[in-house]
Length: 189
Image 1 (cartoon, helix red, strand yellow):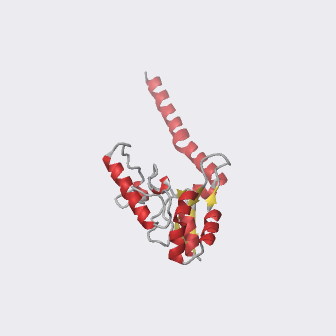
Image 2 (cartoon, rainbow, N blue to C red; image 1 turned 60 degrees about the horizontal axis):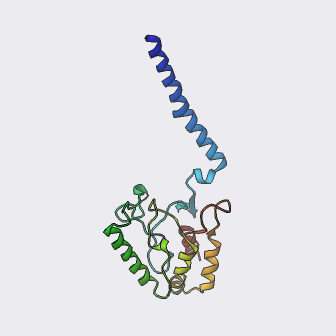
Image 3 (cartoon, rainbow, N blue to C red; image 1 turned 180 degrees about the vertical axis):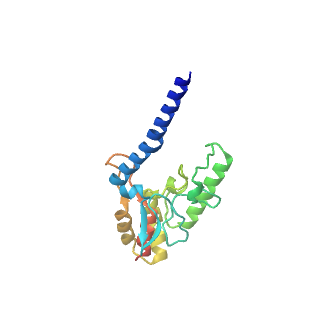
């Protein structure tokens, strides 16, 4: 019986070293070599200071900025430590009320848009921190941002096009605009 216990303990030690130490170190080294930027958080730096990550949305308020998707992460939204979806059912009254409130706010922010509000400006993402909006959602906000900044709409459209990322590998996902990168570019102008 002692031989079986010893064999079990040896196997536990071997598997602990392999799966708890060797494998995580190998995956980390692999990611660091092949995907260095992503493995280090895809951080954006300005003037030697980290201002955000291209992977996590930030709150932007006011008419002069492009606004990201709504967030329910944390009590005030956009809390990276509390990344989560609302988990409300499609038939939940709270979801219907939140959606109606978001639609009214977006319409009030962009009265000159004159078209339906893109869904990604009304709905939250699964993480609550999706850093991207669709090109249509960016286009919906151009008139407001142009008026607030005194910029030409065509100049903003070029800026949005410059920050529009194509489908991953040419066929995965949809084209998208990183709101933080776009707004940082606006801030530097």
